[in-house]
Length: 119
Image (cartoon, rainbow, N blue to C red; front, side):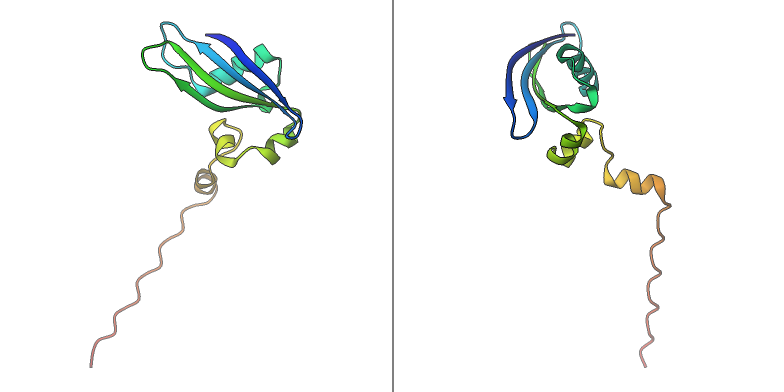
């Protein structure tokens, strides 16, 4: 997997650097989001838990994918700024339904009320 950073922009208001990058994956399928995060974190020299992939898109017929990533100054900023579904997508948070299903047994449905006989 070959990663090339196309643009880099500092965003001091949100405490992050914003990157547009391109991933070459000749002879292979589109790489998994986690694999791209790991490789991009090594290239940018940023801890993986502070690097968020916003989007990753593959083009038809071309063995390159383009994406956007944000490298935050602190882990606290990641939790304050990043939207919940993006955190779930990056593996930094679990879906609310999964946590409830794994932690507690399913509640039984209430029994239907008995029908009153008509007089």
